[in-house]
Length: 243
Image (cartoon, rainbow, N blue to C red; front, side):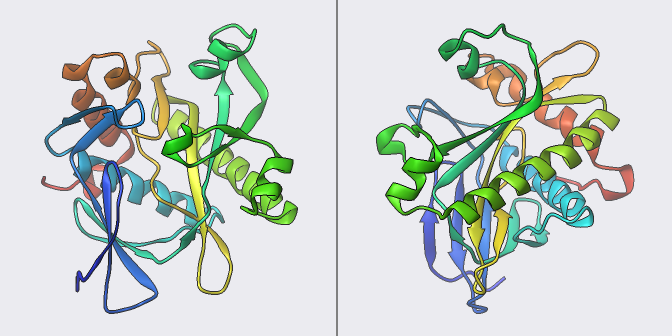
């Protein structure tokens, strides 16, 4: 894989350069964090499950016209990806009101949001990821109005594709966050990951949680069972990996 220098070490992933300067190696670690990293645990094989789930989702998105940084998955917890200059914005799409939305606004938990809400937060731990609007984004020089529109369009397309994909597997896509970056030609691509770490996923019949929210609520013993359940539902038998 030609792993070279460490470019970035985030809360749960490490990014390395490689001989091909247009590509990076993303290592998914077994770390689990919450509260801006204040709480941290290690969960066996969590990185591998997230990497395999993300790679499957990226392939589905590519097949449906959403370009991503994904290239391949040489090992269960290692992704080869196009090198991107990441835009410091977390784009959140909400289909059902829950979490911080109902804590901050007078809207009932569980309310179906039609159309979905698109929210943008400043990706900066030191500022606790505050919410952005178009004016603030442009004042900070993070993105132009044209780029903001592209991020919104791509996030909504991602939501459209994945809502159906997950529902076919008996899972409701409640909300999710995605990140984007620019390739060497200035094209905006979907990057980072899409996994139970970055999505709220509910069983479509029981409404049981199948995501990181279990960890936030202190239900540590249930977390990996939920991640494995998502893996088993969305990865066909012929594509399953022996971890």
